[in-house]
Length: 211
Ligand SMILES: C[S@@+](CC[C@H](N)C(=O)[O-])C[C@H]1O[C@@H](n2cnc3c(N)ncnc32)[C@H](O)[C@@H]1O
Image 1: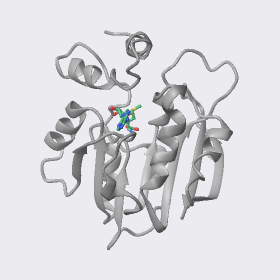
Image 2: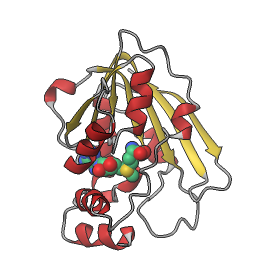
Image 3: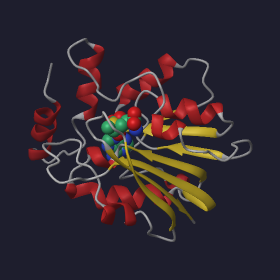
């Protein structure tokens, strides 16, 4: 099995900080790797969040992987679009959820379709920025907020930085990075730091923003 830290480091040092996701998914499909976040259930932190009713509302799931969180949001009535930079992840999402109403799309958070600007009532950013290195984190944080429509909600779920965090990815987010989502017209509604005992990344952020 490839060591994710080494795989990511190789792409990072070659100047391609997001290049390792597609080969990881492809290797996993071939039976030669494991994608640690590829689990059947939606994120427990998302499930614990009281989502507003989704009927008549649009949602966007950033870095959706094989679709676990997008399916959860769509099941609550949101007209859901979900995107990932890795084509294999999107293919997996479509294959695993053949009857899904979710529109699964290959797209790059750092160069998203212009039509998505302020286009969604709910935007979920869960566990993605923490997988990105410093060189592109600020741009990723700013980009996630651009999708939020006036009156809409951005929900950020992430590991929280604690001292002695160790080798990444993931690289948990600092409070300053969480505050950084309040840019380009977004304002912070709430920021909570919670503990998830028994898990490796036990300290977590749950932050909510609106426009
Ligand atoms: C750590 S995984 C988390 C996946 C999912 N959010 C979850 O919690 O199960 C990060 C995901 O973000 C995707 N990703 C990384 N950089 C991206 C980018 N620039 N644009 C879109 N997706 C990206 C990766 O392919 C991967 O599926």
